[in-house]
Image 1 (tube, rainbow, N blue to C red):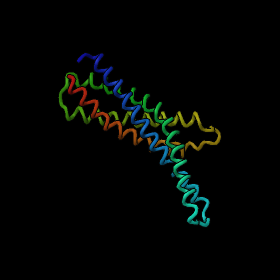
Image 2: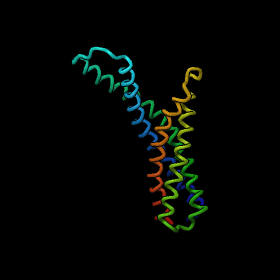
Image 3: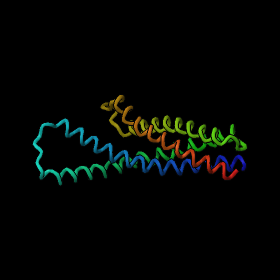
Image 4: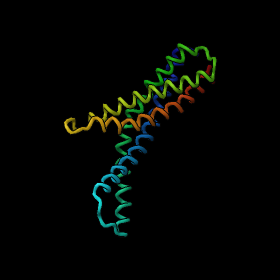
Length: 177
């Protein structure tokens, strides 16, 4: 396998998998996060009298907020997934070319790719989510501490997903070398 084919293969595969995982992860996290905010808002308004006829309205509110959260999460997840996935794919290609070319030590190679991609993805996704949130947030009213925690959760999820995706990249390299 040539260096160009290795770098191109890992880069575009990283970007494609990043797009897929960013979209799915962003929509899922957005849907759940919106309903967590709903629950927090309800708890802060306690006490109120709950009546059984509120059930249909509550289910409708949960579904509506899940839909809005999924759309907003997808809007954040798509660009983050493409950018971070492409960057990490390229980095994995460079690492593979520098250390594991030609292929040897399959177990060490897979672990190295998994740990490195998880670490790089977590850091890059966290920075990307911070940048996007600060772009959309009211900078005067934004709580930076809360923002750091809110974006740490999807960044850690993205890092775990990257570790799993690195197995696909490693398998592709091993099969085509």
